Image (cartoon, rainbow, N blue to C red; front, side):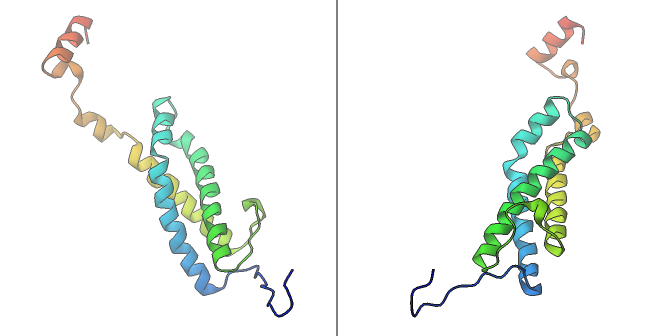
Length: 141
């Protein structure tokens, strides 16, 4: 409660156009941070036998949560009160977060996925020289 002589700060509940534009840039940067920090877990998901298509929903959901935390922190710095839960968010801000999360998840998978072209660039063990090739030849590979 504000003391006598102090102004009570009133929180807005919506972002204006200028703030939404700034939020878009903030979400893009946060999406890049998300992709960087989640490379290890995403790589392990793919190594465990998941395909990029099957891992995408989980990574997108994680990106949405991470980016929503960023959005609420940035909005609070601007004096805007956003819902605590992303599921309660509506409108332009929700679509900004969804778009940024989709981009972040796709970039993440693109950075860790081994494509057929990359796999073909590495010669099979039997075609290499030295001990790995000798082991592969003895195993019949």
